[in-house]
Length: 356
Image 1 (spheres, rainbow, N blue to C red):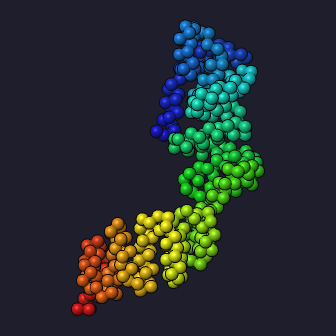
Image 2 (image 1 turned 60 degrees about the vertical axis):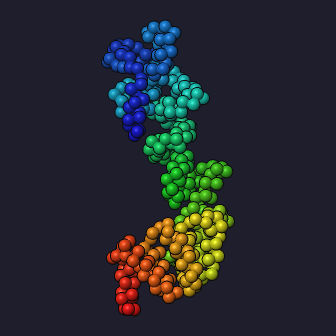
């Protein structure tokens, strides 16, 4: 369900009572016929108590108006509702008590809508602090609220020297695995005077570790020495992850230090023995060391899982190097069935033809 449909359904649950023109609410005179919203559950309670609708307290109408303001910013009577709310003494204080009760009763979505309506009347950092706590909690259970949270973040950014929108932006971006952008948002949080709580510091450290790792992975093929300068220190933070050892191994293989590469592959296998990319990397390194028999063992294991043409052609080359032409031919035929137009397959076919 998208947010528009969600809020439409919430509005549909309200009861709208017709109020005739010239009626008076405090100092506000109703100039035209209008409909006042009342949250249906409140009416149900009054029906159960056999109360007359005429005796509905003004506060119930005020509560309904805040609810509508939060649910639909373009509702027909919003301007009239805002004028009426501003004539009722302590209307914001009253609605804050309603929000508190809804949160206490764990009606978080209802509390969010009412608090969103309060922001229309009273836009300040205190109310934003409260709604950010709510919407972030709701987002964790319902992805629909991510859109809501991002809209609130952009609105709150217009407040000078207000740091919290950047913190919540970092949380949303982190949940989307946009770690570099999340780190940037967290730096904006700090620049705007954000408090360096233990949670914030831990998030910052985590993001710096992750973004450093991502940067290093990008350098593995183009600048393995520079990649290792980042990867090796990160082992202290990511030492329980096999992928950091795998990327270190690829760096060392690219630097032609195959023994060191195998050392890091063994570290990766000690954590997870079933990672196919690690198994394949073992095969590549042993082949580079001309230990073709060992390379074949690893390539066969990897090929059983992946059916990769690259691994299959690696097997062909290894079999040729150990003079096992029969197995080389068998695996070349397998490779042709996978992709007869592969450049390596075509080159190997030419090699076989020339050797006859």
